[in-house]
Length: 54
Image 1 (tube, rainbow, N blue to C red):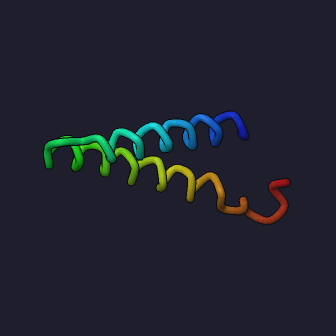
Image 2 (cartoon, rainbow, N blue to C red; image 1 turned 90 degrees about the horizontal axis):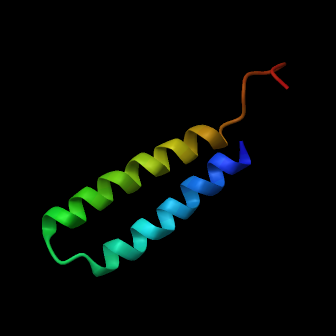
């Protein structure tokens, strides 16, 4: 699972860099939406599983 998290973090870093360079509001909104999705996925993966699942 760490590979998935690493890939999400790498994608997030690239999007943050793109966000800094984005010129139009539309581009910024698209990038921010993708960042929100990545953050949601990271939050989900960071949650502890149900007890006894380990």
